[in-house]
Image 1 (cartoon, rainbow, N blue to C red):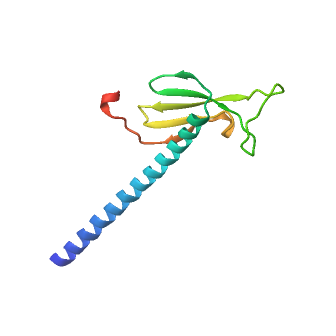
Image 2: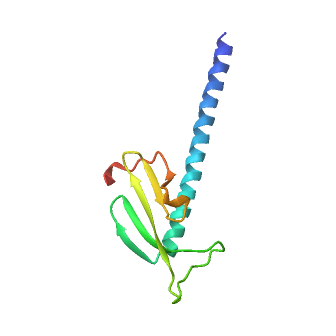
Image 3: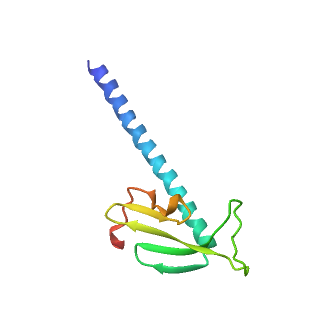
Amino acid sequence: MIVIAAILSSYTFIGRNLIRYSNQQQLEIQSRRALQTFGKDVQVAVDVPSYSASQVTFSVPKVDAAGNAITDAGGNVITKNTSYTFDVSLGTLTRVDPDFNAGTPFILLRGVSPPAALW
């Protein structure tokens, strides 16, 4: 009985660690995607029309299906405002792009808790 109990507790311990590891991997994947998306917007931004401690908006060029910047008749690049908002109470990082999903906010990260010193 003691040996069986030890084996069962070992399997339970291993199972919990595998679940924890899987959750950590998912969080890392989401974090990389969010950072990649944010980085792309920062790289192409032509202006920062507004910002605060929990929100930033970038003016970025509108692009066509091929990824080329769209220009008006005068050759000026047409821009759009893409914003990122961090909600401390929900622990979410949200992106709003007027050309993506009809401008509906898209949650890039969930379960984010900032260091206490920042808030």
